[in-house]
Length: 297
Image (cartoon, helix red, strand yellow):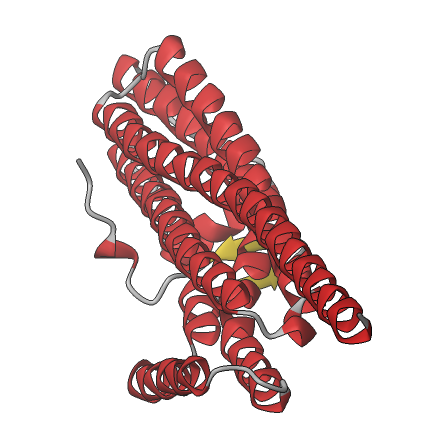
């Protein structure tokens, strides 16, 4: 009888353990389902930003091709810029939230953590690529708008250097060069375009300033990913009973990423270098290594 009682107790303990494992598995599955839903929503937002960037580039081309662009075109561009900013802020906040949760869960050393880290890494890099493309389009638009101003000034007999033109843009007062323009029909049209292009650049620089912190944040997200993977690997090594295959896979991922960084430089640093943020006379201007790299549609 005593042996039978011990057997029943053992069976009950086994059943309790199994029930606990099932409960944990169900909870974890629900958590991962929620995580993947969040990943998909973020991915769709990034795709939408990419579409908006393409639309913005088309509007930039339309504005540059017309001496006096239609007000509706500029209104459309302003709305598009606001939408890109709104969605980009949403994506940035989502990615930063994911990063915080990943860092908090590093000690758990689960295979799910590796999946979450991988998904976060892919989205972060995709977001950086899209926003860098947007930045390149903005800078290209600024340079081409500045070129149009310079040509119109030449038409009116005002030749200016790049340095002088930058001074005019920084001052926010185009009258520095337009005050002495001869009163003729050609000069009036040129003056109107100069003033219009100057306003375009002022609005553009305001947008660039607003996105400055976001560019820094997302570049740092990518830069921090290498160190985070190293920490996850270390936690996996210390976990009791964690399968050796998971550790080996992580080491391969770390080695691959390290080789990639040695070959192409640190990802975050590379993006920060390309963005090349400079603050001069209280005005933030972006100078890319190759402003002509933006491909206009």
